[in-house]
Image 1 (cartoon, rainbow, N blue to C red):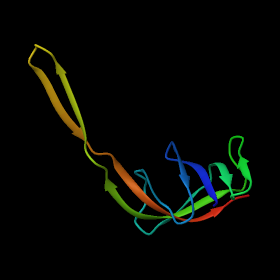
Image 2 (tube, helix red, strand yellow):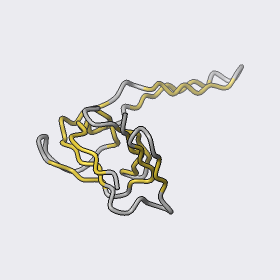
Image 3 (tube, rainbow, N blue to C red):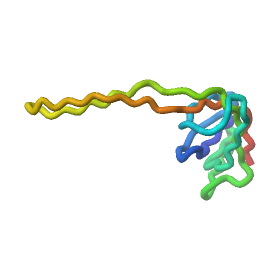
Image 4 (tube, rainbow, N blue to C red):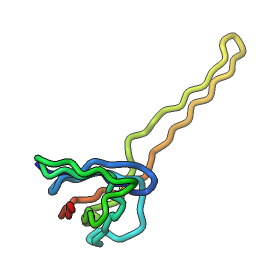
Length: 105
């Protein structure tokens, strides 16, 4: 099973062909093709190539499926015996990408 670990939007992701992954919000409309050139590690199932810092000639291509928001994270702060309570929430925006191809060299 071939896979690649690549860097996108300041984070690292592991992907195989056909996977759907969520990355932090990126620019682009659904249906747009995207290419990630910063491949840090690639494997074809038998041999593993590591980059220093990136694998030369390796690419991960994908297609933007949709944009959305993740589940709400609740932040609750309080101080005991002081009647201090604060409750807020946050929903992180993401872009869902379907991996269409891996070029491992």
